[in-house]
Image (cartoon, rainbow, N blue to C red; front, top):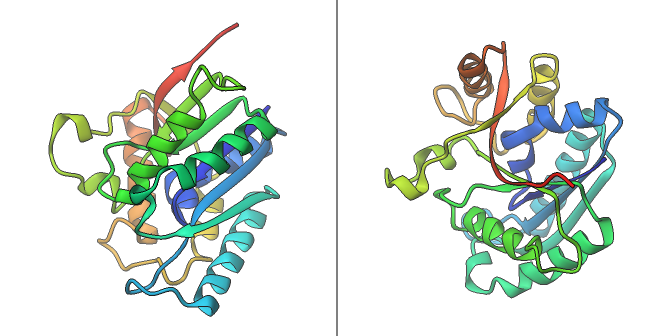
Length: 221
């Protein structure tokens, strides 16, 4: 089983589905995380901060147990201006990797880069492409998906849950590598905030802790 996780920024992969990544790895499945952006701080790019953030991503990957990480180094905050810059490398990655499952951002997210990644992922994984991805799911990012405007088309309504009871601790340890991105409770991007969300998603389906997803495509051949 080959799994591709597409994220706009370094830390989205942990916030959205760090426990699920660890569970895929524990099951012996090959996980690749593709991160689209080099992060801007206060709307500016600083090479040293970007390097440190990449090192944090690699430490987080080691904690979760996966080795495949790809940085596209596109411009943070501007992905929605020219989707083709994102679609092209994603198409090539999908064709090269031929994943069985693709995870991407939710289309109703409040962050424009997250929405752009979702849109580009749908193009890269379209059924008329050179390789047809059998299964596509979208994930939520605390402090971003949850603050989208209250319009029906923006709602994240999970219809698939992954029990991460045994992997929540590993997700938390991985997130601790992103020291610049962590906040204090009650911010959703705090350690306690992540634990509370995992417990809430778990309660929705009878698990101690879970991550929720929306299934976009699920083909059985």
